Length: 116
Image: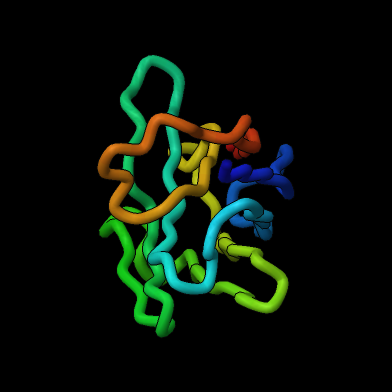
């Protein structure tokens, strides 16, 4: 059974940076396209970024140019480098396969709070 553990969130001022990590276990991580998602209070979970097993990336327009997704298949770990953070980036961030079709399991997520 897959397990996903997100970490690296915190409280940061606008303009600051954070690096999120997602440790995956129980699945063939290196063969699976992975993504970051976020859910703000009162809103639906939304797509943030995606990376294929070969390293191709896609980003939501709202984070393009500020966030960078990467992966280390040897460590079964997914990363999200977040720069120039804005208050509207405040959310709980999750990782999972991309697209999350049929996904029922989500990790606990990691809280990112950006103060203005």
